[in-house]
Image (cartoon, rainbow, N blue to C red; front, side, top):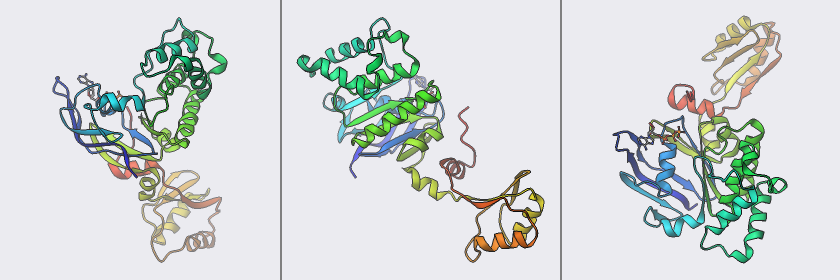
Length: 312
Ligand SMILES: Nc1ncnc2c1ncn2[C@@H]1O[C@H](COP(=O)(O)OP(=O)(O)OP(=O)(O)O)[C@@H](O)[C@H]1O
């Protein structure tokens, strides 16, 4: 798979002395929905601004759609739709008129087909019914979708979205996620930043994890989650007894989570899950549930950093 975005040693030190991004080697495969995950201040926006040619890197290189940035900005950017730090909208104009203005500002956009292009973009993001309303009356989610519509006026090979669901309610978040999935299904590469692990897990095929300007890991979401092992989970009112039996059978990391749940490491080679259930039942433990819970991206993250994903 070719790379839609690739960086080598990409570094940004602000004039304040702050090292916001440090020697970043990022590979965003074409056709992926790539989640750029990290807590606030980890360098996500700085990276995106470098990729889009808005600021110069201190060191390192970045290629976007195969061309060096910022040098090739003029040929690259028309193929990229970007939504960075919230869309700039005129509140006193309707959603449709905002898009007509955006389109008119694009010297490559044919005025003869403008109305149709705007209608298609509004339709795409589900704003057609509200197209005539003033943008200031839009909810945050609608404003965000209008920003996306602006990014979608032209066919794009790559969409770059900086925290696209920030500040949205759960319904608004779902709408954006659905839209991202649809765009990806059409073959557009989507690069989106987020500080929400859960969101990345729901919508992304690939993920890169940032902390304090450094890349901790990157790769397919499924691979990352698979690297972390799931947990053995036993549901029973007899937690103390179950914990004792599991320990006797050599299960590692046995923990009583609450008054109905005991967890532990999945058994290694040579022990079948059925051996464990049989032993628990033989001992008189009342089993209400038993199984291996699939590892989540969060488990992978904890395994990676030794701590939870704390965005605070
Ligand atoms: N123009 C600037 N001048 C100096 N320091 C900056 C500038 N912009 C960002 N920083 C600092 O660089 C670091 C990375 O910021 P950045 O905005 O890239 O992080 P982020 O992961 O996008 O976080 P957020 O989601 O809060 O925007 C932070 O410590 C921030 O304070």
